[in-house]
Amino acid sequence: MPLDNKKVIFGWSMYDWANSAFATTVMAGFFPIFFKDFWSVGVDATVSTARLGLANSIAGITVALMAPVLGAIADKGTAKKKFLLFFAYMGVVMTCALYLVSRGDWPAAFVLYVLAVLGFSGGNVFYDSLITGVAPERKLDTVSSLGYSVGYLGGGTLFALNVWMTLSPATFGFADAGDAVRFSFLTVGIWWGMFSIPLILFVKEPSSPGTERGQSVVRAGLKQLRETFREVRHLKTISLFLLAYWLYIDGVDTIIRMAVDYGKSLGFETKDLIVALLITQFVGFPSALAFGYLGTRIGAKRAILIAIAVYLFISIWGAFIEHKYEFYVLAIIVGLVQGGIQALSRSFYARIIPANKSAEYFGFYNMLGKFSVVIGPLLMGGVGLLARSMGAGGDLPSRVSIAAVAILFIAGGAIFLFVDEERGKAEVKYLAGDS
Image 1: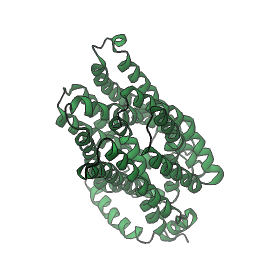
Image 2 (image 1 turned 45 degrees about the vertical axis):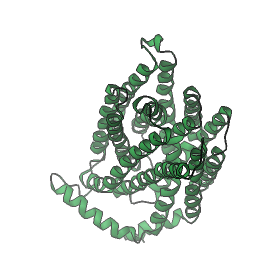
Image 3 (image 1 turned 120 degrees about the horizontal axis):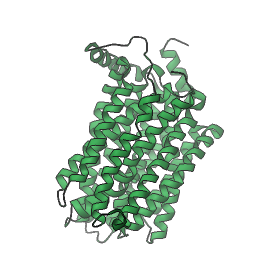
């Protein structure tokens, strides 16, 4: 498959358009609200927040444990695309099934959501790894940013339609907003499945030397995984980057997944929170492209550090907001940096790893990303419950919990300062015997 082919880049990018509908409408938008108000009706807000955090954590742990192993098997069997489609369509089915869950049945919603997130996150392991076969090194920042940018536009477009459905249910033939929200989960599954087709058609995974077939692929993959664990000890730059990424992306993902729940805890109306999410999506579309350009101008490392600093400000200021206009301002600021930090982290990492082991190394990348999602939501939920148990009343426990996220940006940014891209490339070449 030729690098820098426009049709291939289009097909690869469209998967971001496809699955971002799940990230916006389900993870960030309607599921936290519906889980609290419909499926956990009558339950204390702190308890429902803890349940939501647990659901995200279970999914994160599962993906984290599987990703490196499946990545190694995918590399040896040239099966990145097959694994991607398996996880993607598992997520599609589970998301559609949320439409069937009745009021008050939080355990069923909990299980289906965990499986849907597993499909979303598992698919992304192999989607990310395909970038090394889609774009040349000089265009990694641009293509990675294009994917996130298209994702914001696609996710935002369906989310806007879903919001319209909930604000004007009669226009679409629904009895009330609750029915519209449930139907929105069905639209996400259909959207995700349909717009994954360009990747199926246009992105061809080339065979690599040493490709295995049948049962031997599992043995070969596990053997490669053991070898990589030994290699990583000598690839200090990759290890340092992964540690930094683990910490700062924790804060990013926690804010993505828990922002609406946090707004609900502060007493903001659902419509205000939905508007804020729409703002983030449509600001994120041009901003992700702009960050890709910024990465080519000043370097991906400097651009990532700028984004980390902005997130640190967001997490601290977020603990003190009182009015909905402040929540809107925060949404704009998040939109300016969210896609950029994700896109440039992906492209930065793609440049310092062995290209012939991209699925496995992106397995480690996503493993740490998912382990960070384990820490972040539990940190918010745990700090909130601790503050409540110590006598803090009102919305103070929620404010304390969002402020705690700042620790992760400080630690991640400090470690990332010591990551040297050129040294990372040299370490990989030396280990491969190309020094």
